[in-house]
Length: 408
Image (cartoon, rainbow, N blue to C red; front, side, top):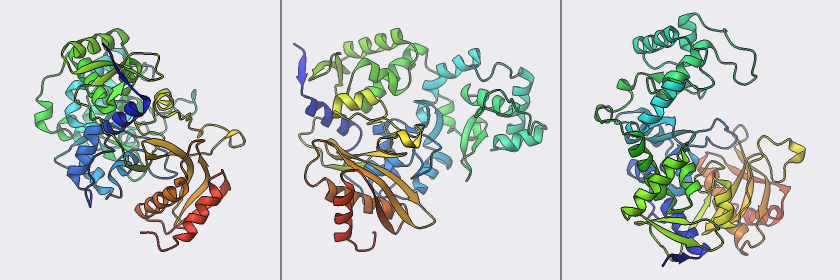
């Protein structure tokens, strides 16, 4: 008989799988970071910096205020623990996923994708040789050395890459180059894998496509706790539905997944056999728009009853909640959303809008005020300033004023 889970049970299982029930470390250490990334699986990378870069925020949401240099060390220093690749989309992933991604790299090498059709093989070879000779390099540096600076297509605004940049992207997606890190302008710095990945990782045999798919579904199930097949497929953006179905069937047969029915879900769900089943979740966290808890918007709706759309690309007059809106997790529910901006020059965390959900508990404004002050302190900002938009704006200002001691 198929086990039945209430939506609240599924919610708590999902949050525990994402690390919201882990005992906090004070202060967070590299061990805390590694444990957290074991929960999330990946950290999505995005260039928007209106508050904080996307890959820093899921760590903060789970670990609390931490030294951002921990992430730089994990991704750029030996022993390297994380490396960027197209794992969900652009993301930091544990280095042990490199051989798991080998089949994906081979696919890109064979297909050369839509951006690389005009990259001559000899140019790709020259670009790789240049990086091998000079070490970690940005596209601008490679372009300048090869004399391709300024040679760009004018056909597609926003994708006007130099020829060397296209070659670097092909080599990166194919695994012939790896990301050594980013500079202060957030530009990728490429290097040969032998200087980026630990030798023991490079020595591991590449997984076959079927074995890799099974491993990625296994990891997605561990990070989700409980999920439908589309959610498992989306976590690592698996392209082959039939192969994903086969991987789920294999894991069911092996006892690693258990088929369950979740209240209100029309599709079968799959519970990781080792998933924690907490009776309560005591979380208080702001979630990045790129956090795994909410990045699959339909899943957020099914789990939390939370309809969420990022409005960065919506014209200002048409935005409902704001430009960069973060859901507020309290306990095991998403109870509010806040539009946030770090005004670093003024040293202020701006809150242009704050909106409670229909079923938000009475202490939402008080708890949100505490979290905003904690976030401001982590970002090195001295104050929190709340604007006029949203039903939580007035009570939030009152709570902040009542606790107007210096931001910790």
